[in-house]
Image (cartoon, rainbow over all chains, first blue to last red; front, side):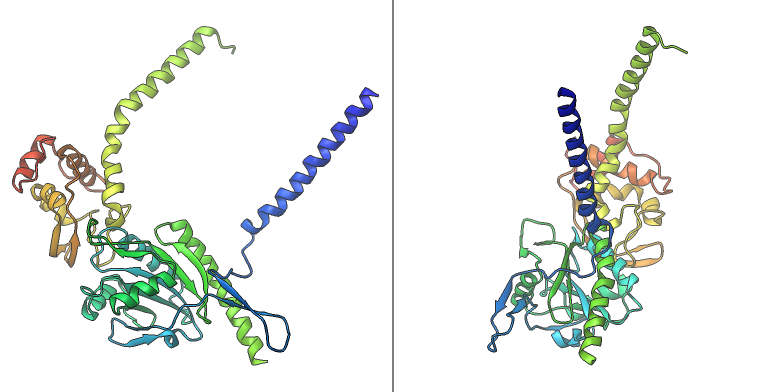
Length: 231
Length: 141
């Protein structure tokens, strides 16, 4: 009897162990296999349809904006129509995190240089200092010759700071810091419908590597959506 | 071969001595590297490579070799405006470092002068303090 109980207990333990193994195998799968669809970041709204059909889900989007880039060109949301883009916030004389951030962004840019569907948008959070001429000099020094691929943009202080919030970047004036501004080094990935599909820490090479892996996933989704719309 | 108690003791002693010795030296040696990672690497790069034409390199930089005596004050007070390094004109703002002691600046400069192929003559703390007096930047520590 004792023996029987023991074996039952042992069989039970084996079963539980086996189940755990299987479970852990399931859980580790999403880490190893690439996602086939990127998440939507931010608040969502579920809107009932007038015809009583299934409700629509509206995802957070980047608000309408008008900026000026390093070529003095006006850029708006339409500039990024049918494209995906990566946005960040910096300033030209930033002595702390910006050079590191922009060198990481440069890494993404180099990877997708030959794909005109991927654009880049860097906003200055110091529009008083960073004139169009300063932004052009900055871009050229960074080796970005084609403004239509990587825009370095400025606008009024208020416009920039409210946009930063929309891109999930924190930015504020802080006179106590070298450079005079505090801001996070986030890179935000936006799809062609202005929706936020990823936020990455631009100071962390591993996170930037994740962005480099995520971009083709988003591009594939965009291509499929376009193909379906064309049917 | 079977290990006797004496062998174990000997091994233990050897390891302990190794750890102690490492404790004495590595921290000093790494001080410059740590300070560099903390205060400089974000702009000048992990390998002192700089960033394109935006941030000047320190690795293999003629400026570092030729301005040996001016570097302590450059770190203390920062620098603003045009500067030519390896034939390339840079124009950026580098912040000063009021928070570093004279000996930390010494460690930092010695790290830069001896890393990534740089072969500058090492500094003594006394020399760095003297140089820093030139920009009223010595804290005597």
